[in-house]
Length: 248
Image (tube, rainbow, N blue to C red; front, side, top):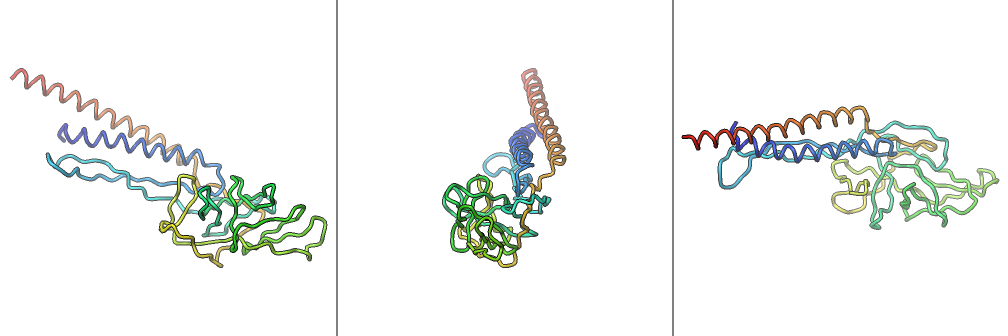
């Protein structure tokens, strides 16, 4: 392999290995984040087009996307905790005001009684945000129906407050935002799905496997060292070649 090709391949390999290390560290940082979906990256080699030798190649990041496998379900007993059984998403209002989707079903209410995520995002119902009356006992049904009754009264006095918007768009149409929420690539809101079901008093953990990610980080660190050594060797080879040329 020529020095020219080694420099291009190793230099691009260094850059994208650092990108993959960033992804792996992000996955590790979210190993305890409820409903988090691990990000998956991959690399591929492409030739450099343009004037000059056709031996130059670059490594480019070809992101596969996200790991959509379900995380482990943990029973909490909290009536405001829900987990999706199987595929599906919970609709929330992102910080940009647009609809977004999450699997993190640990809910709470703000001072105005608005149902929201632990991160402060409003949980969307089929008719908009859901408000819980003060001093109420809340139940969330399997189909996402939110009901409440005054604390101390019987369950027969339950009043329906709305139904959480549950969606199940094709996973290939979902893109992850910088805020960790998913949205449709078209930018349009997803259609509600009656097939998505909730488990009350349960939360879903992150699907990140910390051990696998740690092993991946070690492998990436070794790859980084290998690319760096290739650059050092190419510099040494080029220096010796210059010496031979100057002698001749």
